[in-house]
Length: 463
Image (cartoon, rainbow, N blue to C red; front, side, top):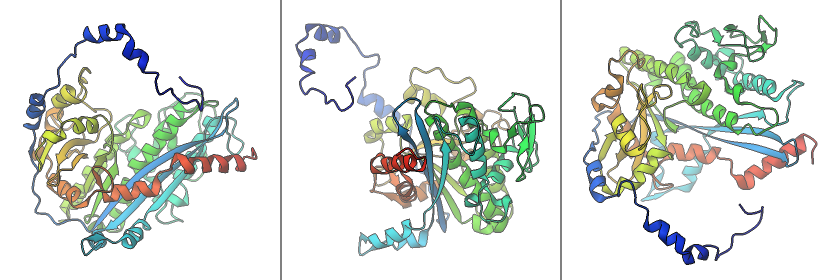
């Protein structure tokens, strides 16, 4: 590895070219499976025609995307850091989107006006060597500030009403967990154990007062149920915990919006479709959320259908990852206007080759949506997911098989039509809502990250 600031030699590779041992080594190697066009052609035959949709496009599209940065205050020991999280949310009226083009060209002023409708949600968390409001450890500080911000006015649809906060949505989802941690009561949340003494389970209520562990009397918070605090350390980077928090917020916010609009106007909710950046899955210690989200979306759409309304279309769009890398290798072989539901056999043969299949099926403990690969009529390739169409995985007899059958997804045609309608050349294989949410949210390393470093140093009196 080079020293910081040291540039690599432009001729360092020449030693490998002259070394006879390199040629001998390469001549003795063979690939396990020779790549071939025939194999790619065989894969392409698995793709099916993209389903048509007779349903009209939604009136609105809700999209969210997140970004985080861990600001470093100094490079001396112990390292001192603060975490910044920003979630961008856009709500686009499709009639306005249709008017962006004028005479065959996109009007930049209208695009700017559309982007101005993005609403960011920011979270700040202490990281390495930083305490908040007199708490004794980074972990205790992290727990307290996360809970406060989840309940803060910035997350409420009605600032004076705690029942419209993001923390209230967390209560509603936590109540859906199976026994013994699920309470069935959206006002009571059950923690598996106290973060301080380990005793439990502990019931906490949706109230503004700080609650305590009945054994050690240390503070406990509703957001402790996410178990993000388990990855927080006092004197080292907490990027993993910060990244997990960002992921949780990305998945909570669409459900938060759904809960509020459902209570205010279910009919309006039927005219909204949702885009989320990334797979429909929750990873890490908060993975239990995926089951509750799956259950809630199914209940919501069943309720809308019972009222005679159109169910919501919910799409997770992946910009990177193993499936996206796989598609980049085979897309030239895929005919346009084709789609593939990724079943476990395909995933473990072509995407996760060499990995032992999961005993309970891929994503059994993390995913709440089925992945698809689609190549549109314009030749763009998308990896996206729509929610599983069941209340739970356990209520389906052969879930591992049923999840990848296209006939089980009546809203799939609406999802593919919407993606094709919103695709853009702004980035590779992108759609406008996610592109706008990301543009408003992304924290660049230069200069954005450096500005946050300077801001944090100044605020903590370390300049």
